[in-house]
Amino acid sequence: MNFPDNALFGHKPFQTARWAALSPDCALLLPSGPLSVDMSNSQGTGSALLKEGDFGADLIRFGANEGVQNHTHEGAHILFVVKGEGWVDYEGYAHHLEPGMCYLIPSMSQHAIRAITELVLIAVGNKHRPLESSERMSPVNQTPR
Image (cartoon, rainbow, N blue to C red; front, side, top):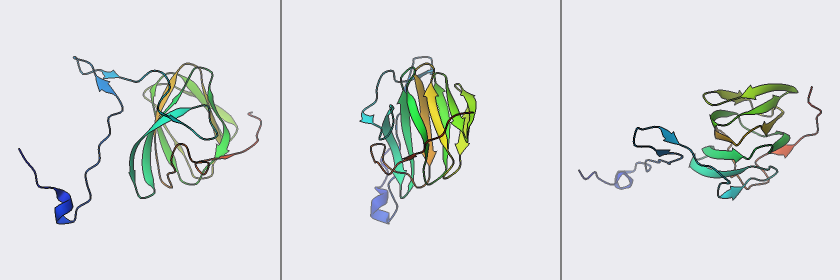
């Protein structure tokens, strides 16, 4: 079936992104190994998924024992854990991460991430900056509790 080009009618294009493949039995097959973009101020790599204005989503990956130091950023983010295990240090308190969990980081809240195993997250947030941008996050010195 052919559909009209929405751009001709003043609509914004419909955006989609594939962040996992499907097995024949419809199980998610998640990527393994570094992704295409080195994240600024982080040991992680990532892949941009979707963006509309200052709202966006990225796939983020940390190898075992990798992470991102304590930092803040403008805009709130919701992160979905899709693969692996790790820790998020939020305002000085450590919280375990595992697949099937999501967590919210409010704007300007101090947090750090450390992977135990390869850790893959989907980050969705406002005031979104590209993965490689030095403006994505601001490192903060803090000793975890």
